[in-house]
Length: 400
Image 1: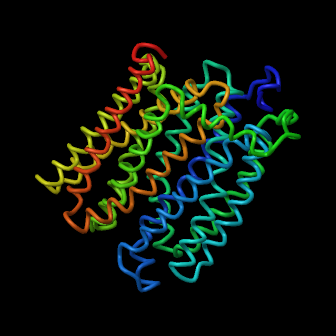
Image 2: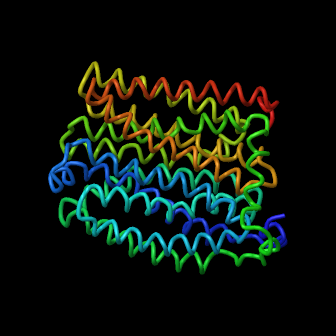
């Protein structure tokens, strides 16, 4: 039994809690995407190849993914609120250190460290929503959180591009560090206190004993594999867009037009939730594959910014609809080991994010943005096939 499970029926105040969690998600995951508009400035300042700063996105994603394996199980043991507050405080420090990086090599190491501390939030937050929110509020709350993680790709890139134009990249990270410190105080105030850790006297590695069982659970291993395709494609598309050489104005517009599609997903959740979560995840990945293919066709046949923006919005909306369905499926299939199950999910999610910049960098150099998009379409289609087959084998094609 986890510490939270023994806390009784206390429920979080939806309207008071969710905006704070969404704010953390936007700033936190935005740290991955914020470096994308900085590639050119960083390459010039540090005298490296134009694609070399893409390693800063990969470094953060790698640390972020690795941290999930630690903090999801730790939050099962010590409580969601404790882990989230401590993680945000630590991230304020590591983010300030990134702002002081003197060169690319040091910056890569600091970004890994920043990713590790930032990883305390997502698995603990997902588990907190599943345990503390009223049942009828959980699906829209999960959709809001996952949409915030994806919306951060747009918000952070737009914000970073704006700050870069007037104050430089270091100011962005210093401002982010201050934001994390303030959010740590806000989270401590709005989240319900953790129950006493009933199993704190046991081995600190006891929470990891659930991992072998999770990997034997029907459907979960292939679902984890398919999870990597979500952000491999999403981060790859936006990295490829940056490397495609668009002027700042159209580039800003192409980033910003995806935001309405992402924001619309939580609003549509009452209708989307009528489709069983495993099937919804598979169909969402299929739609993402089709949208990536449509975007590639648009790039090849015209330079129309409006058409490209609409295709990118469709792609982003499909990813935004898929992510909460996958979280919901993992949480349900993981059972009592929800925190550990979600931590494995988020590990695989951001392992995919670590691959995205390298995929885009290599393919963009070889064949341009259209080749990146075609590869993403194939990756998303493979993910869809894996999810739908896993759901059938797990006996969940028609159930929830």
